[in-house]
Each structure stands twice: as structure tokens, then as C-alpha cells.
Length: 163
Image (cartoon, rainbow, N blue to C red; front, side, top):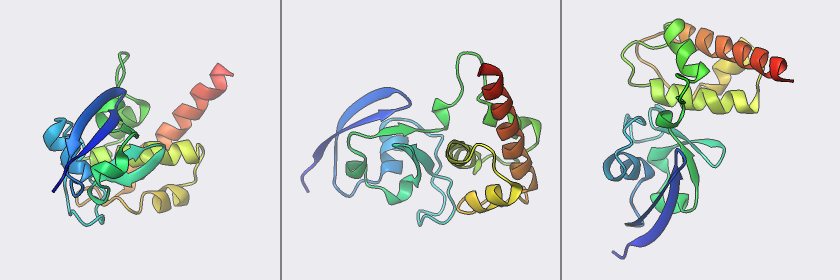
């Protein structure tokens, strides 16, 4: 099988490599780029543990070929914290106990980030609907929803203060 030359920008860093046409993005991230925040859960797109932000959309990296992501901007959980500390979503997940074992957390936070970009002031129902593609076996979701709602409130307050 012939390999394809691809370029990816992951968390602001450019990568060039050869990839087989059948290589999944999740494997490229984890095995070739050592970006292990997105987890391999079900490998069928049901759990959302592998969620990444690809060109401004939430995608499950187990359903995208690396070649399909050629030229893409990708953000994973590793790209959220900054020099000043945790991203507000990470902080609120910690503060409101939105995680237990942590396996789903990178995908949850990455999806929540895109959800809040699309809808900065969601209702609880909109958060639950928007997060429906990301599964958690530990938390019962209540604290995940609280975490996202708290992050939205803080992000909106910061945005208003900046204006």
C-alpha cells in the first residue's frame, strides 16, 4: 500500500509525515505524535473518548483517516492549558468533580469546548444534548453538566469584562 504525504497542525505545532491511506487519525496522534490525551475507547464512534477539534468541529478521531485530516488544524486536550494555568473548562471539571477515572475527560472537555464556541450561553438541556455523543461510565453526568455550565458562566463574565 502506498503511503501519502500529509501535514497536520496539532496544538499549534506542524507535523509532516507519510501515512497509509487506512491509518486512523487517533493512531497517528497517539502512536506517531505521542499525543495521548485523546483515548481509544470503543473504536466505533460511540463513546467519544477520542474526540478532537478538527478545523473548528468536534470529530471522533477513530472515524477519521489521517489522510482526511491533511492540512487540518487539530486541537486536543494537550492544547488547552496555557502558560497561566488550566483552561477554564479544565478548571471547572476539577472544581465541580466532573471527572472520576478520567478516561473520558479529554474527549468531554474537547467536545465541551466546541459546544461553548458554538453556543456560549447554553441551557442545561442544550449541554446534555450537545454532549450526548460522549459517554462516561463513572460520573452519572450531573457534575459534567455542572462543570460545563460553570465554565460557560465564567467565560461569559470574562468576555463581558473585556468588552
